[in-house]
Structures are given as structure tokens and as C-alpha cells.
Image 1 (cartoon, rainbow, N blue to C red):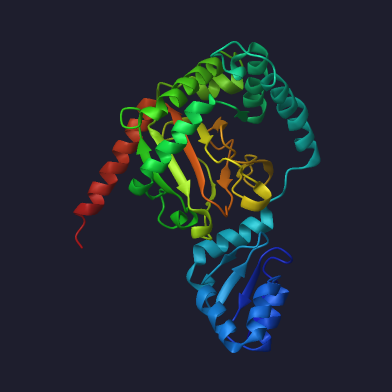
Image 2 (image 1 turned 90 degrees about the vertical axis):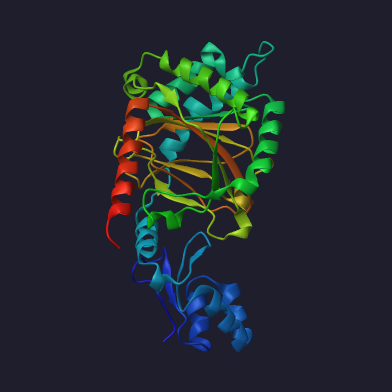
Length: 352
């Protein structure tokens, strides 16, 4: 029987069963807020069959307009989606007001003030106090106009050149990897010289950050001894409806050596209302949203890599480009990857 089973998460995410066609399927789609699809199903039996073929006989209709197709075959992701939409709470007015007063307004002011030639605006002492204070209190910062415009254009051209070599992004778990839809390539300035200015500016930023005598910063940054290669990532947007990276922590158990995440965006003319794709930062409880930040071109978002900043890339409907570099505790990082490689070799040695 076709039905919309919203009792699991009332008013949030709805399971829609299309195993039966006809009027029941139409009503199930309407109940799930999919009026256009309901009209398609009502127009002809072939329309209903086409929907069932693309979505499966059971799919999850999500509040953001997306869907989890073939839900009966995606048990882990089904559970994730139901829990996510049931538990996630938007940033409250107090948090939005605090960030506006203490971070966004002052940073916008200093960004608009004259700078010496070759001096990034964010290196001014007063600007450092603002974004450094944000790192100490909020565990993240976002800086617009991070690089000179020619360096941004060169990086965009470099990502275009690298696209054909990119491969699907992976996670530590094959199960959770289903929630990651980007293509990536690890690069360095030797192979991609256009990365040079970005790394130079990031090194200046990190040097400034490490000079701030705040316990919340020193506790995170004291172990920094290296930086990773650059992860160039492109989400395909409308080519893949599930173009996102579900909620995660870059160094959840503290073992992989990542201490500071620095992500630089290359998306000109980005409109979140149209394109989606924000990086969503959560409070440590993984349920309360702290901020949604658009991946606009020449914006750097940086945050501590541990469990203080769970985050996700929200679904996007156009191609989304970013470059991420991590500052590391090199000893921990090498030990972690040596252990991972040993585990893989042990698995390979097991009899089949």
C-alpha cells in the first residue's frame, strides 16, 4: 500500500512507499511535500513508474527538498538521515547576534580599511585580535579577500587543469563514505606551483595564531610541526543530486595528527539560496548549528580539527571547489598512517 510514513520523525523527514501506484502513490507524494512529483504521477501511469524507477519503491523525503532513494537498501544512511533531521537545531538568535557583533562586523570593518601594498588586511594587529579572538572563543574564523585576486584566478585555473585526475573522496568507513560526494586530488607546490601563494599566506596566518597567548589556542596549536599536502576537492553539483559531505570531525579520536583545518574556496558568484553548499559548523554536541558559511570565492574558513568543530558540506546544486590544508602534529600523523597501512597489509594476508 502506498503511504507516507511520517510517524518516525513527525514533520521532519518522511518515508514514502511507492510500491503501489495510482491514487495512493499520488497522495503519498503530496503528504511528503512533493507536489510536482505527485502531479507527474497523477498525469499518467508511466509518470508514476518513472518516479518509482528513479527513487525506488521506498524513499525518504527530506525537508531540504532532497531525497534518499532506495531507502530499503540504504539502512545506515536511512538511520543517519532520520536522526539528523530529528536532532539538528538551528543556530539561536543569541549565537547569531554574538557572531555578528564580535566577528563579522569588526572583520568587515578592518577589511575595508587601507592596507600597505603587499600587506594582507587580516595581518593588521586589530584584525588579528578579532579573528584570533574568534578562534579562542568560537573555535573557528572566516576571512574574505584572503589572497590577492591574481592568485585566486590562478588557483581556479589549476583546479580546472586537475579535474581529469580526480577520484571519488573516501572516508575511514566504506559505510559513511556513501555520504561523501566530492572528487579529490592531493597536490603540492612542486606539482602545482599555483598553490604557493596560498601556502605562504596560510603560514603567515598560523604564525600569527600561534603567537596569541590564549589557552584555548595554545592547547590546540602547540603540537603543530608540519602541514599536509593540499586536498583539491570538487563537488559536482547538479551532475550528482547527492553532492555533499555528511557531518563529521576531521580528527575525532585525536589520533590522526590533524590540528587545524584551513579550507579555501574558489566559487565565484555563489548564491546559497540558489546553490546551497554551505559549510555548516556545529557545536561540540553535533546537533546545534553554530554557523552556515557560504563557500564564496577567496574566502578562507579555518577551525580546530578536533571534536570542538563537527561540520558538514550541505548539498549543492552547482559545482563547488575548495582546497583544504591541515596543520599537523607530524609524529602523530605518521604513526597513524603507518598503523593504517599495517592493518591493510594484515587484511591482505588473510585467507580468502
